[in-house]
Length: 529
Image 1 (spheres, rainbow, N blue to C red):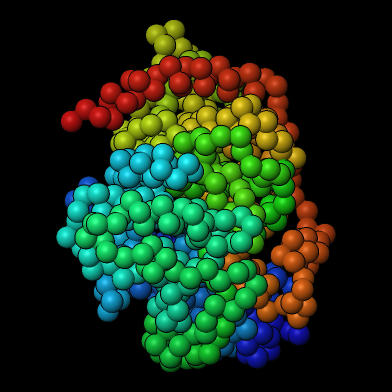
Image 2: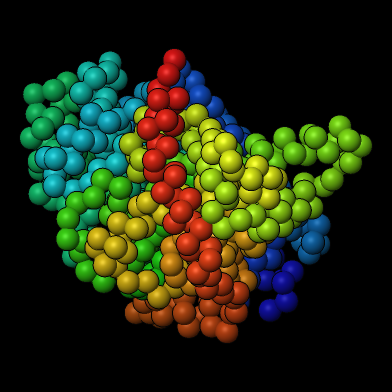
């Protein structure tokens, strides 16, 4: 079917993802290729010590993003986007959205970026025998209970950002299993919230003002490939106030950005994994077997179909690098050179590639926020060097690029060296890899394995959730997600693979020695008033 009739007849599929700096919508065709997209840029805000997005900005961003998609469809194909075969919603995992019985928000949205739940995370990890990171929804809920916050006796429903947007569109309080695995631990066999752990949580909160059973306030898990509701009239008007786009479209289970990244890179089988790098950076490694012990640096979450995944999540990635690029761009403008942003990044990456493998002892910390992997409650970007360091633009820029993956390497080394997890290949995606060299090669050397960028790497999680929505629509309901992705979506798709370079491996290892030694200084700076 030609593209315009396909869109007019409602055969295309829509994926929408709420990233940390951009909301993106993607329309895909019957061959799963992107046909059009829409975007809305936004930023989190630090309000009263809490990283948040106001819910009105969520709704406005959704409308603007979808409106941009509709406009671009009409401009590109000469037809209006009035219906679709399916829709999927994805967003940043974790965080805390608590509502009362009238679905009114009780406290401002607390995002994954907050590190304000240390006591709760530590206590739950000890009591459940399972690593509960600070950003998980259950850590936020339990910390609110420990703090005896005024709202806890009014909580009727707790969800994630993806679950909230899905609720706006369908009225259904449901979640995909991958996003659910960042709320509370999952039973890998039964594919439900772990029953023994929910019972233990209820015991811990018994006698508090919370006064609820945990399962009564969590969203219901809908398996991948099943319908999770349909677009209501109210939801359709939220997407498109003009009334052009109609209701009745089926939606797949809402998922987290980690899971859509796995779908978008076809990394859902054991010994494969992916690294997503933007404002934050995280790796998702599909496990062959359970880890030998609990590690506070490593989350155990799931693939979109519920298989265990080791996740190393770092709150900080590209923000500090971006800030430095703005500084260099400002210097050039003062010198009369107004270089386009993309060209500026390319030039600075080329300089980084020419730096010494160990950055000549120049070490940078990219911590805008706290970092659980390195046990920092807050962050302040910092650069230090030895007096005899060769302080050149090349070495400084290479250090800044190293810093984007340094914390991830600390967690990944635990997996590969202590837990002996084997990796065949890592698939990379996200804004850090828009200019593949040197970031792709540096990541390969940091992790000690091949890193592949697929042709689809730039499409991101919006494309990934669109694929999950397309999987919901498959004719053969017995077809597995693995078979669908490998045999239908990625069959014949090529990518570029970079292997570790020994000189770079040695250089990063030397850099990491200085990096770890300087963490005490970073901690002192970050914690100073």
